[in-house]
Length: 131
Image 1 (cartoon, helix red, strand yellow):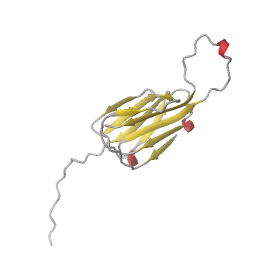
Image 2 (cartoon, one colour):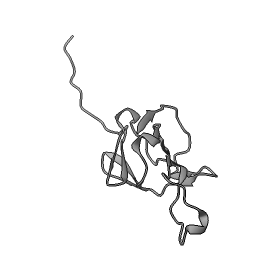
Image 3 (cartoon, one colour):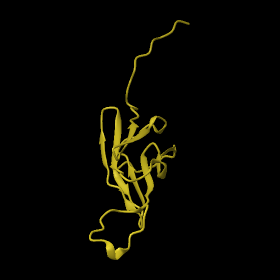
Image 4 (cartoon, helix red, strand yellow):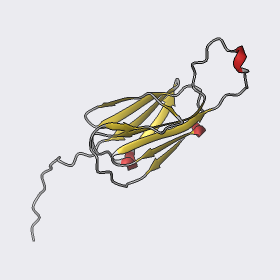
């Protein structure tokens, strides 16, 4: 799994999503804690080396491919609901994050991406130095 960081700025701050036609689209949960935005997605059956995650200050894009090991004839299927092939998902975040501190993991088929928030309005006290 590669976590790519790009500091390019986007102008649209609305939470939204961008899809790529012709590819499967991941389902995601996106939520916040006081200090970070978290993205979770079920990604079972995908090798972590087949996943790319691109992060900017205002968006995250997940791309990958779920590969089928064996070829099964279409006429042998009773149900065929699983998606096999390339997928992607881009999410424009509702708040700026620090791409340099972003990290991800996979556990039990769940991809989790942690995106630390940038708190620009935080203030701190400073001391006055003697000359």
